[in-house]
Amino acid sequence: MNDYLTRAPEELSERAQYFVRVHGLRLEGLGAAQYRARWLERGIPEAVLDRVEAFDEQWGGLVLPPAPTYEGGPKKLCPDTPEAAPSDGWWFWAGDQRTAVPYGFMIGPRGEFGLGTSRWVPLHASVGGWVESVALTHHAAKCAKQITKVTGDDVDALEVGSYEPVPEVEGLADTWWRGTDSLIAVYTGQAEFFSRPDYRTAIVYSGLDSWGLRG
Image (cartoon, rainbow, N blue to C red):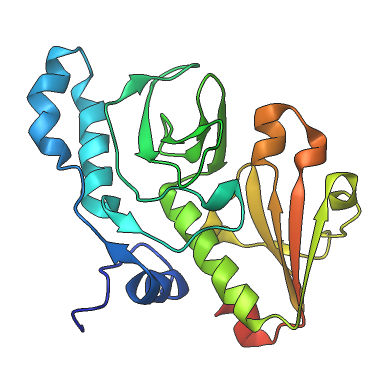
């Protein structure tokens, strides 16, 4: 592997691995293991610390091109001190925001990637799902003949009944749908976070061939 290529976790799809290797940048991570004794003294369970260290080992320091929503997503994937989640279990910081947004990017009690402060809205079932979504965005935008953005109630008018979900993004509040010649990304995270249905957004990538659909 060439020196300029970034290490990509093997759990990702080939498309996302290529995206991370070519377009990602790996900077220094937190080094979470050095804080373990201090965090144990604060009463944080060992199992939670294991999760933080695993995240830091696999994702820590990874910088990706910006996502099309949430003002680009995390600037760099990097954990911080775990905290008790608003509902149950523990969560921790996924990385600092790129811009001034009124929420943080968090890793939830079951490994979800989502938006959190006083509220918690999981976007994807894992941070890998978030990375897959960002990779698919860049792939689809490069291959599509037409890109259409719809918001609010117009999102409901999109007919996805004949589409299939894209499983690798592990969608929760946000998900992707694959049709015969188009991909649709549906983003409802901010709508749920702010209780504003008009914040729902969908982006339709049309005119895709087989390579554009799957990569």
